Image 1 (cartoon, rainbow, N blue to C red):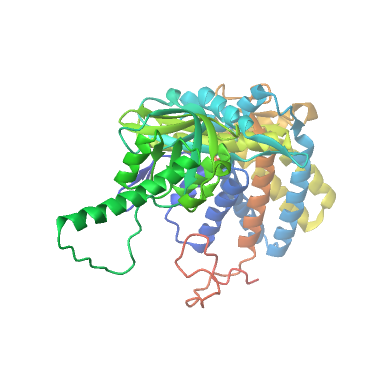
Image 2 (image 1 turned 120 degrees about the horizontal axis):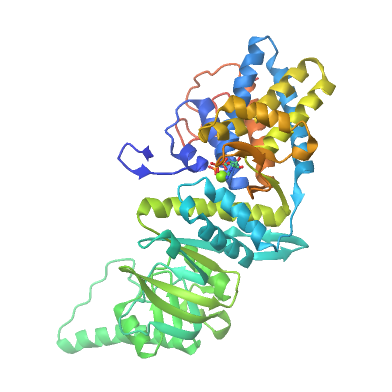
Length: 500
Ligand SMILES: Nc1ncnc2c1ncn2[C@@H]1O[C@H](COP(=O)(O)OP(=O)(O)OP(=O)(O)O)[C@@H](O)[C@H]1O
Ligand SMILES: [Mg+2]
């Protein structure tokens, strides 16, 4: 539970979120925050593992420095170890059939199982897999899953089990006028980035009115202009309008009389998603609306969820657009569910795009550690010490899992090392439920290979960077253009951090 100075509370198990929310002062610690951020951006999961491994690499390095091994030797050794570790991980990776929803579901379940919403993990995992498969496409012979196409909408109320995957887009807005139809079938959708209002002049103008007729004329003229705008919308053949700006009440009235429903003040992000989903074009002026710029969807309807109204655009022209409406008892539950869903969507994407997986529970780390030790002997010299330290640091992953599961870390490590002596036991890891060392591949604890490879990459890079620092020196205010201002957002970098 993270509590901010103004009392905001975030409850999470997500490494990336914890690191982002921490009030970090020390410049070197800020680099650890960066590790989590990179890991999250690149692969979406494994942020905690990456931070734990970076810390462990630094701790092991410190011991070597105490033994008078020069930092450059440690950095070189770590680099060699990291290259070799990735090679080993690649060789461990197993190819999967990316259409096999069952395997993908197991991967999503593993990612969600470590989160607070694990009670609903099977259900949520299924939703994540269905959503990812929906947006899967083959581009230039490569399978791509763009999870930005999956919109996640949070609505607290009901329970996690009521979370719904909608084929189409859901907008957190209501239909703008009570007389408009709440359900439009075979919708022809106009996407407008213009006000349906009379533009106010930029300077103050004054009109002198001497009699009531002139007043009426003035108002009639305004009404006529609005009617003309609505006629233009209607002439394009549209029967639904999504408008990024506001719509005048009189214009709404005319629209409803023409049988056109409308939603106003839609966010620009939603407008873009709508354009992608319905195949329509966002127009900057009502005049430019034409039949060719309209999007299409089978049904556009307003639905009530609790006290809120939402507009569902179902069966849009482009089937690749999907929305997950996340439900849950309280706001904190919904927030954490959204973060877990993000992890699940990311791991499913990673697995589909690479078609390579490993088992979890610390098994790949234990196996890589073992093979690295063999490699270290071949390298020899002082670098051997650094490679061995790297191998030992990798074992911190199964160790942490054992500790978190309330097991004796020493017993588990001894058992794990013994098992990994035999290459057939490469998937032996920590079974957190039974408290034994078991084949985690058989336990269906599966993870994408990409996550593990990225963990090694980001942790080694960050640890090497910190190891190269001789001293932390306070620098005077940085010149403009020389980088981010001091005290800026995390990741502003070390003052003089590039120094050798
Ligand atoms: N049922 C399980 N049994 C054993 N180990 C598991 C099980 N489920 C997950 N794990 C392991 O837990 C680790 C992941 O833990 P967790 O999800 O908390 O951290 P992370 O993925 O490193 O970071 P984050 O999810 O916060 O980005 C992986 O090593 C994974 O193999
Ligand atoms: Mg995870």
